[in-house]
Amino acid sequence: MRYTENLPSAEQFHILFETTGWNTKYELSKEELYFALKNSWYTISVYDKEQLIGFGRIICDGIVHALILDVIILPERQGEGIGKEVMDKLVSQCKKYKIRDIQLFSAKDKAGFYEKLGFEKRKDDSPGMQLEKYW
Image (cartoon, rainbow, N blue to C red):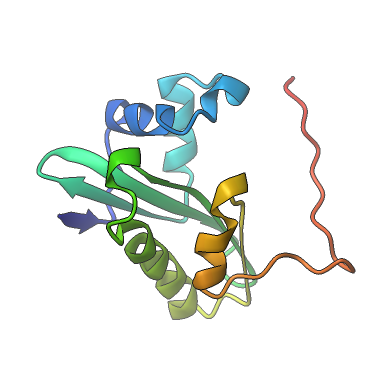
């Protein structure tokens, strides 16, 4: 297995992203997804030979806030410790730059995974909010 900070190709990422089911909601093209990746602060890609089997990224202001996104492990490779390694690398990058606030979005059934890594659900006195529009 090889971990790299280089972006995968648009095609490789699109194939991995499609395994999540998220694109039924967003309906993003391969080009739109790749544009989003290129605007990341930090990325980590995981390969087995030439196949992209894992990915994670951060968007960040470089000082205060970081948001971990798109942590995706190929379904048949989940449970091998790849997701933990991806998360360790993402959090280490934030620590390296002394980012004060690290947040993430979790798929409904993955909260326990992130809790094992030290993440906590947001407190009731500071709930997350969103504006979900598709213009």
